[in-house]
Image 1 (cartoon, rainbow, N blue to C red):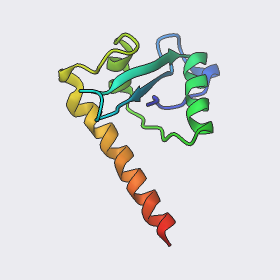
Image 2: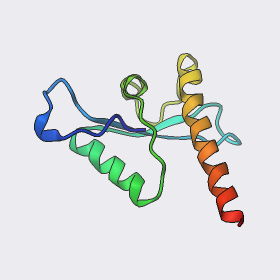
Image 3: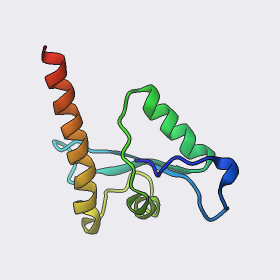
Image 4: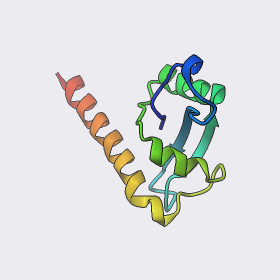
Length: 104
């Protein structure tokens, strides 16, 4: 997940670009986990790596700010399940659309 990408040269110190990487294996875990997080240059590297590996990006600055407060490898708390479920629903839709396109 990444916040809106902005020009680093025009931002104030308060307006920091953040990126969060999550994973979820429903067969082994009760909830998704925060696997990586970063601000500024580290956020750029996380986003670049995701793009390089064709991992879709989902932008939600408010959710990113909440997830950024969690420790790495910590499961998402119940209070964020609904918001995180929207992210995974978005990813499932993308995967389904891609499979349908590749059928033909």
